[in-house]
Image 1: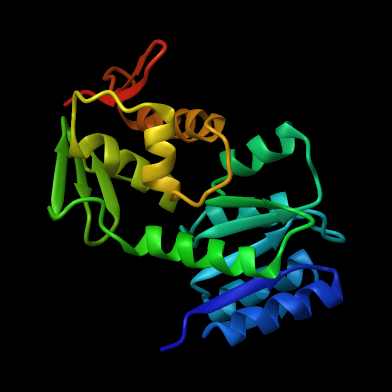
Image 2: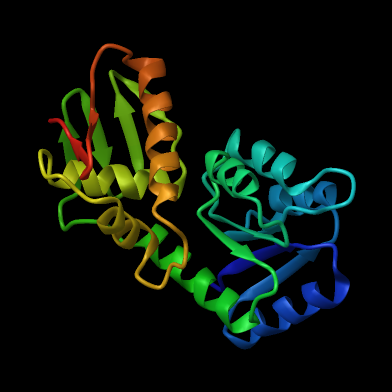
Length: 226
């Protein structure tokens, strides 16, 4: 069965170029030119990954991401001409798994799509389950439970948590975590790890506000406390 990529991009020519490149590389590409149509296609087709432009007419990309992340962990790569750090951080806070700024090469987009799908499909370790205090991390079903309640994590958040929980007590630098969870070809910056850690902590605290699961080690990085 072919891997389906949903392209939500209002620039018609760019949408077509991305579709052609993805299909040439063995993907099934489906397209939308507005946020609302993109949401409908996402609900109908349940794609394996979404390429999401931020500057969409009507409902913009951030609103689309918010709606999707309410119920789904579908990997999202945000595509935008915006350069401001705030826009990038907001996208990451909403659960984006990667971020590409225009202008870009379609070949780079295809490489990013493959890398994100590979990260979301690979298991961080050979174990099937990880235990971190009262938290159970299932590496086969990509699910996390804390005190009997399921955590709704994005793929990037799950991979980050699994990396930390796989070696509790070890201090991982931001660069190590970035490479382990985003891939060596990722051209992002280390600040993205801080955003993912912040999101993880917020979700954990809603269920267990009294226990520290991820500790900041000043000047070094982060570690999981088992």
